[in-house]
Length: 277
Ligand code: PAF
Image (tube, rainbow, N blue to C red; front, side):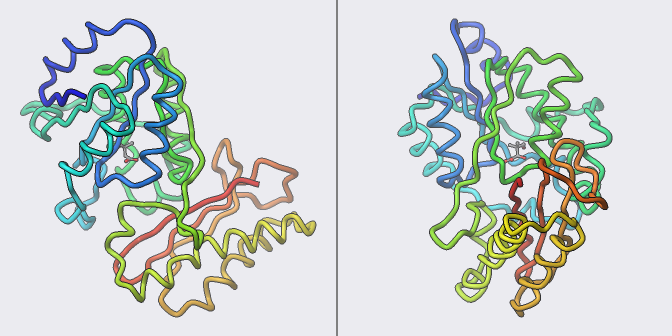
């Protein structure tokens, strides 16, 4: 595996590749969810490019950019083991040089849920992912279902801007107790870690209600709220039952394609999770 840090070297490396390319964009501090993306990319492509870049433009002023966990030596070892050929680790100055002024804004699907609570977040995500698409020119790009809205924003951007690639959305990888893998889980104290699986319990309770015949989205939301209310460490930001394509909140019974999602603070750590019915 070779490590590349400059834009010019990344362009040159990409020009030297023939055959299909799988791209795995990450912000590092890798966990089993990232490795599942890299493993799938390895199985489906001739070459695999992973990126590690903590993208400043997708963090709000009061978010955890400076504190975001980092462990580059460990990440490089894990990506090499997963069979990546190239890892691109640019600096913020290389990605956003002085004079940078071009951003990508995806509209409707970026507005609700995370977009409503984290203004500018998806503008930062779409911009950096568009740049990575231009640099890596992948055949396929791999993202996790855990960030369901991010996946919809990137699919929409790829379609609207005619990127010639497939966006592959891979299942959420979970701890044995149901907690979705996330680099931010590292912030949790042992007590908070014990409380965190409540997100998954809330989702699966609503899924069970759905399987028992509940179709009213308000009842599905209430079902998640009831489970979360029983966990004293959980402060709910939102629970949602939305159309899985448009992400518009549902107010009438739906037959399928419902995205249940939620954002919950456990202490100072903000966790998200989702499940599609
Ligand atoms: O999901 C992430 O880790 C990031 O949002 C991404 C897609 C790498 C863009 O910075």
